[in-house]
Length: 417
Image (cartoon, rainbow, N blue to C red):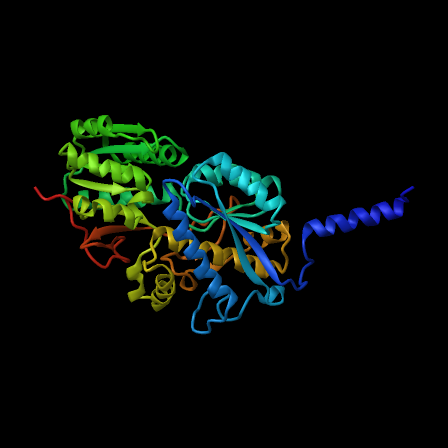
């Protein structure tokens, strides 16, 4: 018969094993799960995210004395005896339920210390709930729906801005143009029927009312739809001064192509990033939407003021033959922020990592972003992640707002009469 003493000892050992290495104990590697669409319509997003994370791992796992970034100076995590970061990628295919299942697999079978993801906000919603259930930190790298950090979760963190922050800067920009004499009275909202699209439209609808703009079109469409003809006909009939789409890449391409087929040219497009920050969209339709403006978290022209940005871009480009963009820059920084917290936690225990994340305070100068700093509030949101507006001019993105970050004035209207 099992004695009480042996039972208690066994229970304690089991609990210790589940909690991971004790504080300060050396480990060889720390395993992090990355959940992205690696197949399906958004597969390229996952491929690019993989490259962003691999670039971050190179910074963390090998010494880069010339880079003033978290964990760059030494090889590995000094707080864990030089342990290396290893990432296991999981394909959620853009499906929230697949995301939930893959998150559970990573936690229970792969024994990940933390997770990062996930591009689609609808998938982040299920991943983060699973992470919460198992007390495993989830770093939202590139999800922008504001509802994600307002669910009372303790293990959810987001270093980048959300759509309320992005939409406010978009309306500040429009207000500024109005003050300069531009006639901007009417808006058209166009958004997919997921948490990303509905959250984005809710914020923009509220701001339009508060700032005195009239919505002449308010169109929700089915994500990954085969046709947008009826919706574009409605947009054309409304003839708003500014079209504000919230769409991923495949839908964004279809939208612009359908606009061309139906002869619809709005005066301007002010986009909620997503597909409109992806080079694949511009490769497909760029000439049709020259001078389109999108919000962003990152600007490659920041390299002129901060050489660090150019150095990281060179490392990323050597792997992908692409420049960093809004998504990949956020992904790169998300992993650095997460790894920095794991290093300070000196443990792979989820609760200790969570507490270290809550104490994060990284100056903006030690990131590749135009942020003041990385510091999380009680909901796990970084409120100092200052966004920018980018305009696609001459086949590249240029920062046009706010004025202190702009390298070029905005072309307005987008299409000249």
